[in-house]
Length: 456
Image (tube, rainbow, N blue to C red; front, top):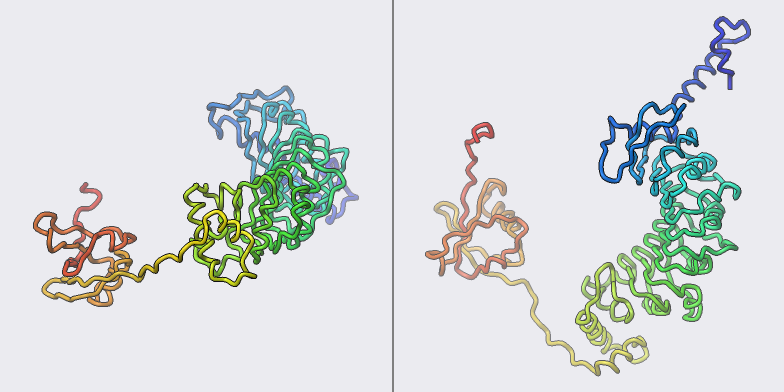
């Protein structure tokens, strides 16, 4: 870099035009650098940020470049601000001694020395979000990692951070409880030689994990894990014995396998090997594609006797019994050698069940008269259709614009008492109006109001 003092000496005979151009570019680059303390002073000065509950008034320390007091809450959000440097540590310490949460996502931080400088100056910090900062290929020296020791929640989404750096952080965060590693492109998991016994939640959504052998490593590294979010990974099996899963995941209570690659019922059965599992999410998996929405929930629930929350919804005692009975009936016509073990357990609980009586669930229809002026048409309506569907039908039948008409239902038996009822709501089903054969639908043109907003 060209010494700035040369810029002050006009007419330097030894400075070439190229040097002067380089100096100007360098100066321009330096002007674009935004520091943590600069962004902090811009966002939280009295002109931009109002004083309110939970906000502390922090006067500028002597000699600080920040010339005014700042209104600082204990939760700072400085996302998407172009921050790449920390700025003066003494200023950070003076302003941020009370801060407990810091969101630095979507910035340009690509140096752990700068990040460490910020964190080391905020002694009460326990939540740190560094998502969307370019940390690929940037290593964290163990000598710097001690400043993260009080962090309890660490968010590193889409940072492309290496496993080596993750392990350096977890070795130096003895109070870490929640770790977010989504969208980091992981296809494998590097095993750390040092466990992190404090970690309770790991969210590793939207990576490229495929083999259960990689997932197994989380149990080795995080023995106290109670929540594991594996959604949007292509994990295609739960390939471990009961003894292994009990040993590796003794405290797991919640697992999210949404949009994973599970395709065998045996993998669902193995979820019962987690000794404390109570909550499961398993939507969007190949295994369930052939089934209806109702069948998916019932067949899953019947296979998971200890689960009390399935796909985000609590399971009632009545729902579980209905699901288990459906499971028996679903499998009872299969050959003996193809019956799952769970079938025999449930038969011993409920006994052999008679098949349900077949019920005709075909769509109901009714004949009504459609009246449009002097014209009357007898039309068969399917009652599961909506008012919006009926308007589309009438557009074809009567060549009418759907947005230029109003519909009124007339009950022939009660019209003298009730009068016409307007069909206002496009999403409402026709059967909810109790329409019967011989009733009438009156079609009238929609009259535009002549009142302007200025006349109201």
